[in-house]
Image 1: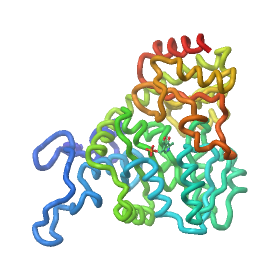
Image 2: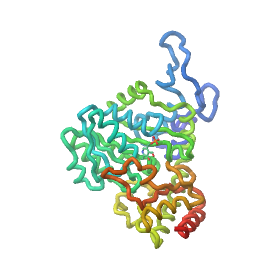
Image 3: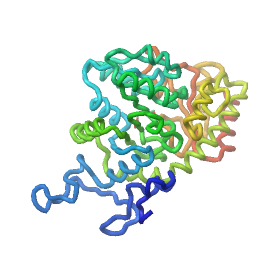
Image 4: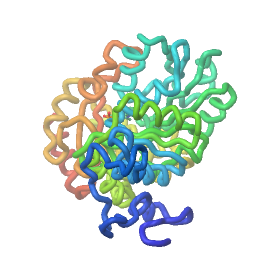
Length: 387
Ligand SMILES: Cc1ncc(COP(=O)(O)O)c(C=O)c1O
């Protein structure tokens, strides 16, 4: 490895810190500078140092795009202003009116809303399928199907979808498999290595890791999609600014250590919740009782920091519980170092109300942070005492 230039055999942790981030050629700065500029001087018309205008490209953003491509094991990374901006740009790049998508039946509410309210208006149809059952996916495919859209683990029910099995189905039908890898992060799971064509992140979550930035990322090795995405990234212009790109680059440097702690803490809380008399059901892929425990073990290196549970006493108990915690903050989003608690039915997934995939009223979702596990457990304990 020359200075800041990891090679293909470098470990994940090394690439997370160095990929795309050699020392700044102008100054030797070890950390990639935040290139706060909208435009770049041209020596003569068309003679540039590789950059013309910051919607089209910015060196801080390029560093992030190269870093995430390396971590996901793909050829090309592209950054967007948010996870939803990434999804929108991808759908516009990959689909046309009349195309059909098979959509996992447990996805982020905003993703469902985008398909159901926005893209439907432009003639893109979709069918929901329980993707834990490959035969349901097969049954949902039509001659117009061009994409399978999976999220794993899913938000908020933590279903684990077999990426390799879905990739085989997509292949057989000449469709692309897209995996939203937000919950796992590339440290725990790399969908492209399992046959997915495109991997997508709300980098707002674990990649950023500190709840201080909104950003989206896509990685693919599919040259056709990459070309259309790069065109649309510039043409549509839903790009992140350099400071946001820098914040995610900095977050990624500690991704591996954070994910190990998130996962260890979540495992401990899941085991505690599973034996609690006021808990009806725990959804966490690290529990042997999880229906896809074996799939999770096969494709994830750890079960991750997200878990959900149904509380006894229904909606009333759930709404009370989420306002009784003191370390867990009642807030939307996830993946930061601090623990968050929320009621998906009324918060992140409220847009599913009245839909076939409405979230149950007793469900509580935890984004388990990296505080002391003892403190987190004591916090849940005192909240249970109040419901
Ligand atoms: C799994 C998943 N995908 C996509 C998104 C959308 O990302 P963003 O909020 O960065 O637009 C979210 C947001 O919560 C999410 O949880």
